Length: 282
Image (tube, rainbow, N blue to C red):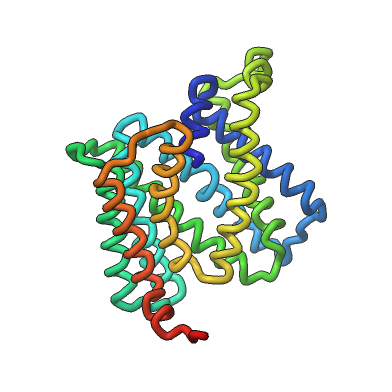
């Protein structure tokens, strides 16, 4: 649903401004929830928080937004579906985790569904620069998920670790803001005061960043980065559903078929069909 809010906000703000306000809001929201300072010991662990902030909040969204200026949203949506494969590859390198065939079969089925949803009957047109940036964004998010798993082994509270990564993410955005020419002038505050902008920025900061990043990081802690990454396939399904309800966009038969493939692939990749068959009854 963030795509819908971002689309509305782009009428008044630049992509970098939206990201900075979004994650700054999320940082202070998590600080209010848990104001206790996180004491990272030994200090050598700090580099993992910095890397997670750089990858998960700065590079990923910047690469995605820049990719959208060179290529179509459909191409970006399709290419981001390789996140689970990158995550599986990096997890294999980092931890030696092995995956069974159903995982890859399910991912391929879900990716086919993503293609149907995103393209929706349109012709696929390659844009090398933008498409490469989208693939890099997918790789960066996979790195972020591996880093989150590493951080989760330290035993800190998820709210505190997420807040720490947001802090680094916001700091890394400051130079980008400077070079993009953004200014904190009276016009900026006037735009912030508009109810529609305020509501969407609050949604992005409080829900889509503070709540969703904490729950994502907790899921990575409990399920592991690879199994959690597969659920990114639900993103386009939720976006299409929200667009139909909020923006009144039409749902076509191809979108319905794509949704069915995504859900089927998700069930197969997580081996949920087998679990359902063997679940106790009565």
